[in-house]
Length: 234
Image (cartoon, rainbow, N blue to C red):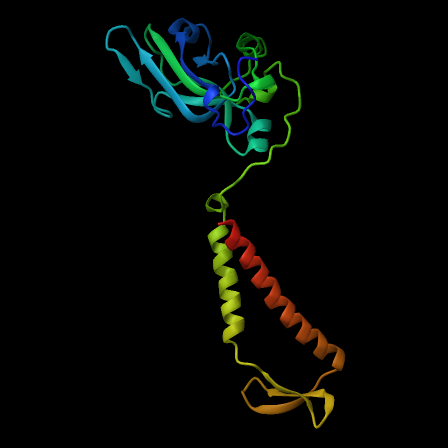
């Protein structure tokens, strides 16, 4: 293979620069699609430049001139970054050339573009709603890849931290309802306050007392542990 497998999308050697395609390739298919020679590819470092031979280079914009298509679902889930197989153009372009610069995934995961074109045409798949997994000649199961994910991009992360902080603050600020264990040396009696705030003596089984004490301590330790682990990951 001309390019090594890159599960990070950042290998400099896997950057394909100014790969040339002609407009006739687009006009030859129903959905105005081009599949780069070394697809699939990452979305970073992607550049698509059109030249009609008269007005010079024009950099095309995603969702204005084109949309990415044929998402490689298995790879995207495993790597943690979107990987695509092709580009469909939203408008018919006059004669000219297209230059692609893109970050290929490389390795054994590069598919044969002609095979993909053939499947799309013969089975009448719409590439704008079809996944790369269904139309390539790469039949291997994509392996799981360890990848770092910034907690800034984890949905609900900030809300989770805020809720944990609220719980810790509420527990710390709560006035203690138990002031003494074992009133008159009787371990089943607690001196505490009733809902009205009046000091009173209540009868509680010793087993329940132990559960309350241990449970309270365990809860605080658990919250401290969770908060420490989340802070370390930031």
